[in-house]
Length: 99
Length: 174
Image (tube, rainbow over all chains, first blue to last red; front, side, top):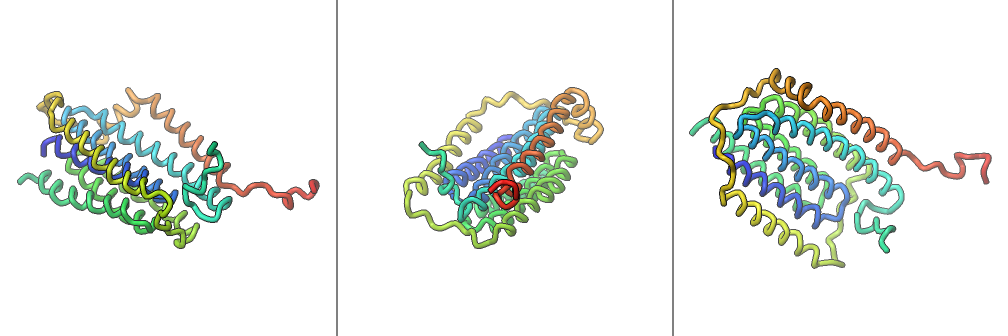
């Protein structure tokens, strides 16, 4: 398969994830959409690694997975705290800092 | 049709459909399970791209650990937290698909215009050996930094999610 096919697939997944981040109001759904965007980027990294016969892209994908794990741990902690303070995990409700 | 093309033809559409389902569903549990399907099909795509170890990590860490944590929290908070149809700001509901189409249009145009440097003819050695050489050679510092990041995230998650100390936990203060 040409690398472009993988890049297009990655772009499609990234666009879907971005739409989810904007549209969804449930904090958990927003987190899921962010995960989707991270994975879209991972796919392009691995596709580039294959195209240029360099493993660096694969290594970067590893680090993305590591950062995603850290992000989910902190994100879910925030969501749990949000559920404790508010009645729901709706991100629209978490607007206390709005000026 | 090579094996890689067959993998792409099967896993690619599954990946996109599951991703669309994950984004479009209001129910976070359904979205999480759809995302798991996406992650598995991405792991299959990684196999096709000659990165078998990354495919394994994707399944074990991403589809395994991270998604279990996510679904655990969804169940903990109760599946009743299905988001309500948004009534107040219909403009944002319109912005979602608009952003998706615009973003994909720009990216697709950039990709299809070419501009990718020509591929190198040889294939990379995708074995765990070569990967470890790189990870513990050129990327040693990043590897160590990642361990510090994970520790920091661990501490942060505990601090953020623990119960706030309320009045009755401090009997001395009234």
